[in-house]
View 1: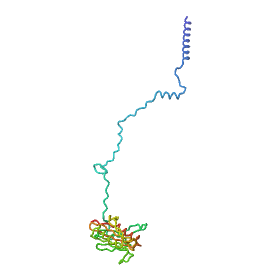
View 2: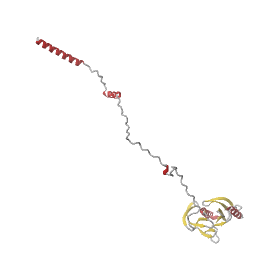
View 3: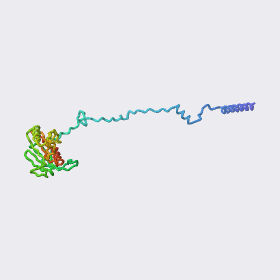
View 4: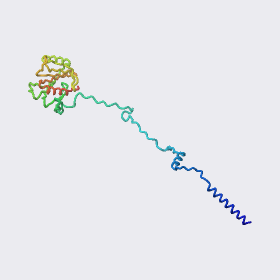
Amino acid sequence: MKKLTKTTALLVLATLLMLLLSSCGSAQDTTTVSADPMMADVLSAETEPETVPSVETDSSLPEPELIPMADNGSFGEETGTIPEPETAPAADSSTSRQDGERFQDSIMLEGMPEAVFYEHVKNDVIGIELDYDYENFERRSGSASECFISKYDNADAPENYLEIFYTEEDSDSAAASIAEGLSANYAANKEAFTLKNAGACTRIDASSTPDGQMPDHLQTVYIIPLQKGCAVATAHYSAEAAEGFGHRFAEIMDTLTVMSK
């Protein structure tokens, strides 16, 4: 009886083991596995997006440095206004050269530059100063006159010269009387003119006869108003020297400056 009971127990145990093994073999995995593992990873990543951490504001970081605007006060007055452009001083009516001082310059003669050696002239009685070409002209001075004679002429009877003198007569009446005196031999043309340094003046051109012919000798007269009276400058030159001496006299006249009183 004991043997039967033992055998029965073993059979029961064996049956239980068979059932357990059968249960394990017939069990199926219910988890669905994707055929494409890479796509599964991607889908997994899409279904669970990674949270990007927000930038943490650190109150200990320094504030950005501000570039200061330019201070107007550093350029001008303390009021901060921009200074006005500096005004160049007006040119003095007289130069700093001394009477008899020599220097070199150049002029345009017949379309070509030519070196000129000048001597400065100051005449306090007339109230003018100018520069003349001392290589081509000889200077002869009087108390109230200046004369520049061509070195190629006979100084006692010159053809080409520039004569300047002072008169107490006002410039308008002096111009009228000179034009009337020239009208006997010339068709005198009186006109307003501007010299480079001396400014406004009256010029009388005597370069033709009353009947329209070319005279042997020409004259150009400049009447320059002064504070009292006027200066009269007359260029005398032959017709054949008009391009040479006539131009040189005009260059000398452009250097003429009225001295400040």
